[in-house]
View (cartoon, helix red, strand yellow):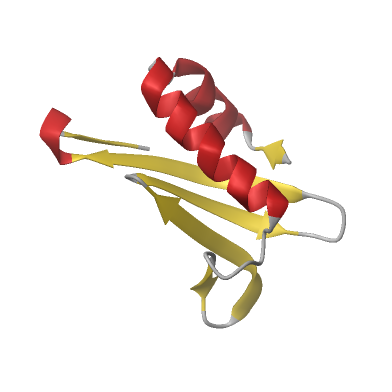
Length: 84
C-alpha cells in the first residue's frame, strides 16, 4: 500500500477515531483491492477504483505491484465538514 503525500498528511492529522475508520477501510482495500465492495471510479479506466464505508471514501489505483491511495475524504454532516 502506497500513499500520495497529500493522503499521508491527511492520515497523520486525522483525529483518532477518524484515523481508525480510515485505516479500517484501507485494510479492506489492501486485502482485496478489486473486491466486490470496490467500484470503478471511471467507466473508461479499469485501474482507478474507489471504496467507501462509514463516511470515509478512498480513491486508489491498482497496479501490478502496489495499491496507491490517491485521495481520501471524510464526510461528516453532524460536524459540519467535508475533509479532503
